[in-house]
Image: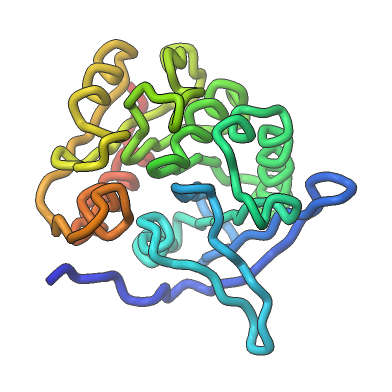
Length: 251
């Protein structure tokens, strides 16, 4: 039976910023310090929804995605995590791959980066994405240039299909100005995120690929979060690799 991380010990708050005259972006902030070295923007898979809903007792949200489960292992005295929902005007639909590749998405994330600069002016900012969220991390890494310190792509989309991940076809990862790394489970069973094609992409673009093994294969759809695709049972190993890579000397 896989061990799931205990609830986050860092403080948790919900913040909202305006991204257009008619839309807002809400996000979860997990922090143990107000002077972190690094702030990680966590971009979940699927349509990008974490379904933040205000209730009488505060907020509720979906927390099964790998990155949502990983927050207790990431937020500490050096790292703050920020987990954005989709903007208010996309609550019903979530992100399409076309939107992830749009100027609007870029502008939304730039506004979030502006918020981070105001709150944590000395922190380095990293994008951390998983599964279909890597469509965002791929195109945004290219567009944001030196506005971010680096990008961690996990369970990256690598299959060429009209149904999924199309903006990543032939994406020139080698033109990304910030640091980047792929972290992938060697036994990922999702048809969109097979290890072999991703290994080819990493070699072609000379990007480090950290292969993960072990954990729990789970059951059911291999593209869902509680499987090797979502690093079930190896969350601590993966988040440790993330932190080690961020704190390592750039090659």
